[in-house]
Structure formats: structure tokens, C-alpha cells
Length: 404
Image (cartoon, rainbow, N blue to C red):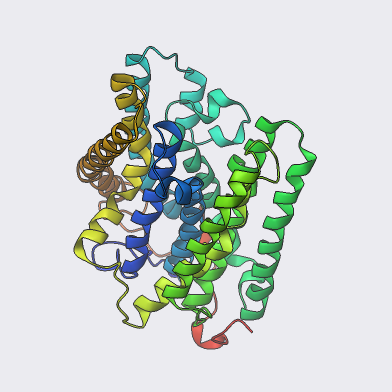
């Protein structure tokens, strides 16, 4: 039977349908920025304590990515080539530009740059290699896009897995994914070399897949009618409480040890972030105010991807110019300059590079508006591998509306 090819949700009419999720992107990016400011420029009271493990914001983005893709593509049939091209158009242009800027700053500071690392970064494969020259090569923040590229390849497969197609199966999948995250963290005890353990638990795409898959399961569940057991306020409180717990833990255990909160902050935070994303999406669906949907919150959310890719470059450039601050006042001043300058750079990057190039590539690539539609195929013709599609699932009306 011939499948109907329906483009996934995109464009101005649907881009911010779940607007609170866009607003949350800014706060997750801010946590990552404050994490790098604390560790690279100097600490500030209270803020640095709470964001000492703000790199967990990357875990939030992995969960959010799975949730949004599941929400967008569930029930739609899109050729895999179209889906992958859209994701390429979304992340690669800004990756390429930020990597070029990062390399220029490295060279201006007299730092050697690994060409192999730059190539691996641009090829979206650098996080597969447990060597610093690859993980840091080009733009250190870009390692997470290598993981994202892996998630995009997996996503069409995840959508057809039986373990994610029914409410009961999703319930058990969530339990298994959460248990697996804990097991992976404990497995760090088996890796004696700190650098290898760091890569295996924090960078390795297979490890991070657990977080993406958790987001996919939650996205499908909410799309099919499930609602989280806590509201947005409680979900935020749980996320904050988790990071508060990390404060005394970090003072008692060095990050180099496997049972430190460093890897735990990434691996064990996924369930809290999943509840947060599901609760924010539910609030939007029910028309409740969240404080995350104002014009400036949406604008900052749109800039968050560029902010994530460029903020560390700004920190590096300013430290190269001024040196590490010596007093708390100088530290606070440097923080303020970094926040203002990096956000301004992110705004320019979004409006001049990210958004226009994504639209250009989408229009001129597979499934784009500038492509002539393919003629309908005969019913008797079998679909080849080149026509692989993201299949539609059963109608929401055929599933129970809760994870039992």
C-alpha cells in the first residue's frame, strides 16, 4: 500500500507550538555557560555552587531533543532522507561557522589546533574517539553535536520499536532506561583510567543514547495523552533540589573519582529533566501560563543553540586578552562582559547564519519547497532501501491515554 508522505511540523505556524520548551532551552544553556564561567574564570558565591555541575544542561538538551522529535514526527510518514537532511540543515551550518571562529581564536592565542580534530568535529564523529585532540578539536562545545548526529540516525528505528509503541511498553522502557543510567554510572568503577572513564560516561554517544531515548518515550507518551504526575512548579523544584544535593557531595568527593557527582550529574539527572520537559509541554497543551513563553524568553530560546556553541570561544578570547581575574569584583565584571558579549554574538549568529542557512538548505534539499514533488508510485511497486521512511504509528485514539 502506498504511504502518504507528510512533511513534519515546521515553519512559523508550528515552530513554537510548545513554547515553554523553547523558553527552557535558554535556562539550560545558561547553566552550561555559568558552569564554564565558574571553572574557567573564577567562582562567585552561591551561583557557582549551584552551577558547578551545570554541564548537566547538555543532558537536558539530549532529553529535549528526543521529546521534540517524537512529538513532531509521531503519526507522520517522512522519508528518512528528508528527515536527516532537515537535521543536517538545523545543526551543521552553525557548527561549521563556530568551528572556524574557534580555530581562528585558538591560533590568535598561539595555540596549536589538531587538523584531525577539526575534521572529526565537522564530520560529526569526534565524540566517538576517546582522545582529547578529537573531543576538543575545533570547537570544544561541538562534541554534543556528534552525539546528536548519532541520535538522528537512530530516531527512525526507535519510532518503530514495539517497546515504545504502547503505553504499557513505554512504562517499562522508562523504568529500564532509568535503571540502565544508574548501572552505567556504577560501571565507572570498572574503568581505572580517569580520562577513559570521562569519555565513556560523559561523551560516548551510546551512553548518552539513554537520555535521548528517555525523551523519545516521554514525547510519545505526552503526544498520546499521558500527563506527568507533577506540575511544572514541582518539576522545577526537583531539578533545583537535585543540583542542591550535588553541592555538599562535590565538596566531599573529588571529581576524579568514579563516585563523584561529576558523571552522576549527567547520567542521573535525565529523569528529572524528563519530568520537567513533560510538565512544561503539558502546561502549554492545557493553556496554563508558565512564565516561559514571553517574547524575550522565546527570543533567548532561539538564540540558545548559538549561545552554547559560541560562549566558550568568547571566554577563551577574553581570558587571552585580560588574563584570569584576581579578585571577586574582577570575576563578577568578567562574568558580566562574557554574558553580554556572548549573547550578542549568539543573536547575530542566529539571525545571520543559523536561521537563514537552515531555511535555505531546507528549501533546496530533499523535500524542500524548491523541489518538484515526485509522481505517485504504483501500488504494486515495492519500496527500496533508498525510500526508507519514518513510519506512522497507530492512531492516538487506539491507545490508552496514560502509562499504566
